Image (cartoon, rainbow over all chains, first blue to last red; front, side, top):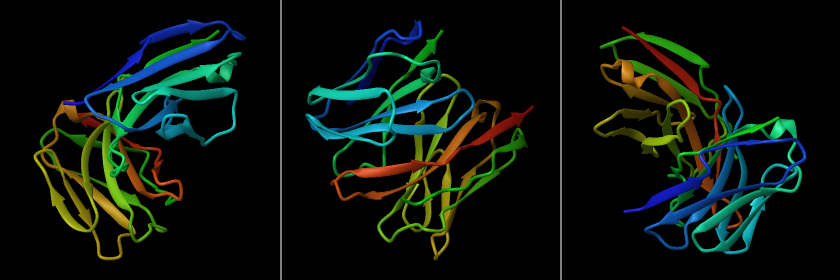
Length: 113
Length: 113
């Protein structure tokens, strides 16, 4: 069976500090991978999606970036965090041929102070 | 991308049937409709998916009229544990070969004892 992991679960960072969130998927190969952000009490905002290694598309211009160094690893980064980067970050995966069914990780709660 | 509209919130008593409707007026021919459930501080969980008419699984039913411009998630005999945010998702293959999905703002369902 497939599983998805995210870490850390919770993170408190000062403004201007760097960020690195990691997501890994087990039990499948060549998944589509997604990063979402959810602000408090809001819906999900798609940030990045990837159909393969080094193939990443950005949905929203911001100070965040994503990388996919391995088939089942997806990393969300920032060089300098802003207060507005606070939120709940979710990684998800889907089978390549059926992207409409996404399976989400447990999420990372990020608080930028 | 098809945009979706859902009620912001709904209240229901335990044991009642709950119907949540999602509008997606510009749904495309090859779009699927998927519903997710999200509890606080957790990633969304897949509930049900359909393309047309009616789909039923052990958790819910999904009704889609012939014009497919709306869909209704039906939860039979809700319990307190069904209190969550429910998202309607409409997606289709993009030009990049992956699926780009648009999450609605979600419907917060509160089940009252």
